[in-house]
Amino acid sequence: MGRGLTLLSVILLAVSAAGGFELPVETTQCVVGVADGWNSSHATLSFYEKRGAIWRRVGDPWPARLGSNGLVWGLGMHPLTAAATTKREGDGRAPAGVFGIGDVWGYAASVAKHPKWPYHQIGQRDLWVEDPASPNYNRHLLLDHVPASTWENQQQMKQDDPAHALKLFIAHNAPPKVAAHAGSAIFFHIWRADGGKPTAGCTTMAEVKLRDLISHLDPARKPVYVLLPKAEYAAQRAPWKLP
Image (cartoon, rainbow, N blue to C red; front, side, top):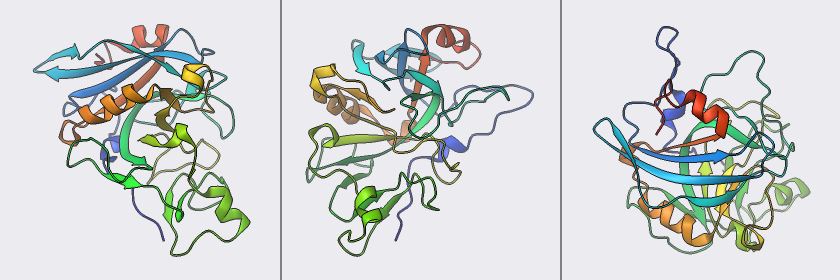
């Protein structure tokens, strides 16, 4: 049986034809990732909080790794042009744009976080469906039995991988509007080889930075993740009202 994702209502924000897209007024926390270009697998992350009308950076920026092939437009809160190239399953690119942030997942029984932020301890029966042919594509499933079929084992959330011991969902191509083949299982998680390896499309960082980020997120402040190449960030910063 399935379990719905929470904290993703912000991804349903409609783009006003008259006023264009901008961050929701209720969003007062923002993780910003900036890469040198569309083909870069490196990014610099910063955490911002908004007081009144002013965004202020909290702490220092820190390094992160992205997809081995860089970035491509994802499916999130931001608008897309008809000509935009978008993420596809298995393309090795991290989704770029503006995204809601979902639940925390991990191996431990608990993690330091805001008391209202959902945390799920990963067990044998937890699946995250990455099969584009499945009606449950890019959704979490909780089985009522230990995975038995080949398909169930293929979709099982990783059980013994240090890089996936703690992760935070990035709402790319997220329910309730999921497009087949448009990319799945996009998370913040712990990087490999101390940042020496890129990802298949996730955003990874040092474990201490991920734990610090999770501890600061407040669901009442409707946090979002903005990931863009440097030139695109500069172009969209004012019209989208980014930090």
